[in-house]
Length: 197
Image (cartoon, rainbow, N blue to C red; front, side, top):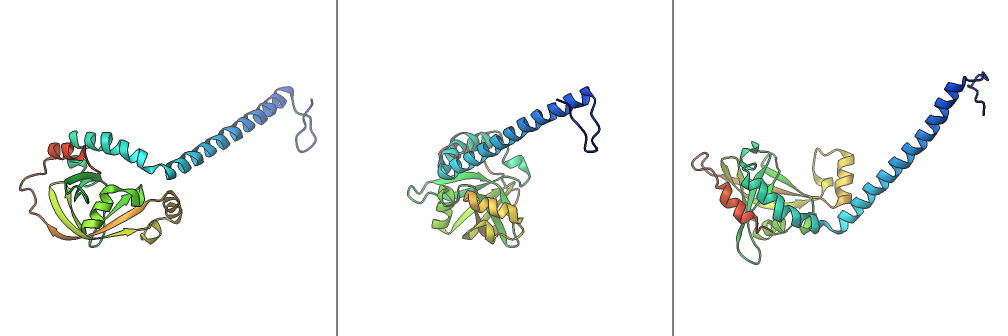
């Protein structure tokens, strides 16, 4: 089949073959991206309904590994341990988190929202402790926030986090322990975190 450019000039055979190949490649690309988008959407829908499944893997495997390797203490504030007391058991537990400083305390993202056991423990107790580097902070006044209530989040991120069911826990710092007296025992925290949540 002969092909013509927009001006009616007949294209050379090698150019015709190139254009024909682009058409096939364009359709393959469209099919690939459509399938990838459908797969991501399906995975997000599945995760919204089964959030605790991923949390159990993180609690039993990832968190203890982070603590045993000393990655919490060496993260320079990117990661910290929140120390909380179990609502039913009364056991002190430590959970790795990513705290974001605010004017009067910290805000912590909770990917599984209200289903997070450690967040429920903190909300029930009304206070917790945060091990951040070589500092021990006492936090209180916990408030669970929706992504729409968090200042500074881009609109697209707010919408996505809201749809996925993420929540934030806002806490106020009311006391800081003496710095550098004795660093937190991350090895012991690893043993405690293995049973966390």
